[in-house]
Length: 528
Image (cartoon, helix red, strand yellow):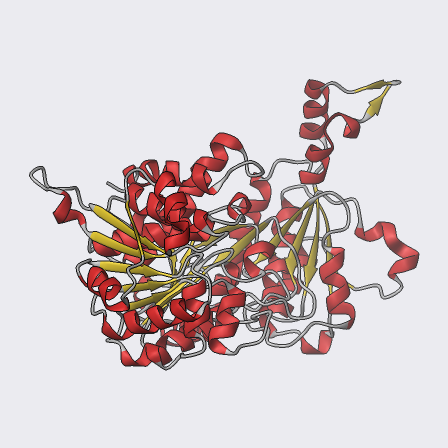
């Protein structure tokens, strides 16, 4: 899915209205209809009611309703919505949605948060149409403590406070209103972007609505899928509102949400042998961190590499050798040059997991980075070691080095502050500056190279365990050695998908990196 920035969407809207002659109120009505379609499809009562289970059943004639009686009650009940509107065009979408729901028999409360003097012409027009239908756009009651009940008890809260153009922190009534969308137990549905979420970065601007569903108009926006925006957006529905397809220029998007349809793996030739499927060299492991080397090796084998060699320090060689059946484990040669020569015979090198930051490890990493011409993946201590020699990235051929940091490691590499408010922009700038491929790990891992950013769509919290990153690094090395198309992007998606399959089998709490690795072949099968 191509993702468009706020500035791009503003320009496309302008072209549709000014150059194609599409009335802005028509686009607004289409947006409102999309909102209403999604609102009407929601099961009523909302998620809070369902979560409470039997304790939420309603008393009737001295007994507790059965599930069948409760379903009948809610089917007959008049549904209700509170619509929170700002004075801009996003608010106009909400006012129009309120009118449509009112005409469908819903009980609707429509609230304006902001100055009436700042209402746009389109928002004013939607207020006029709402009044004609018998509704009213009420001013926000600032004495809300005394009138708590008037903002509670609705099946659905529609957030139409602010759209994609918000660039300042919310405060005062606006910040309060974002919190009040969550009052009660109903659903929260946001129009275009949850209010308070930056449409481009996903950053929370002071306060933000946390939606169950976000109906975004025309195209997806990056902020819905990265940072806190990915948490606050809930389920994202992209709705067509009538803007012509040709107004979305090809190649204009530098940010893409990676979904299964974008990926593929070629079938293996029937007459292939192990040498055809890539040789992987792994420099990893140290005392206390033998598992990192073993997990990398196992993931590389499961990822299809023909030959996997793991070089480890002499003192941990027996331990790692016992853990690895399919990979070849070798102790470090006394001569650094011998280690480098071994790596030069491979198609991809993975450096760093569990390596430690000792003097020899640092010397070996720098020597490998300078002398290897094959693709190199740097992870864990490999990243920490080169953070002291960051210019070494610039000395390698462009796009032959892949870095896989989490936010803490990336802060050491780049010098950025934590937390990272704009993960997309910061990652893109670093990768462009150092001519490398960067996979910034975390919720919705971002892979970027050459200015393009690809946001991953797979994975779950069960993967937040030590060793998951080692599995990703090994899988990435295997796919790189096999010369798969976009191996870093592919590895991130497959890694997340394998984690999802493992969680489906064992649950998020108990799933381990080993469970994830065992699911890699099944994730791969989905792409062939």
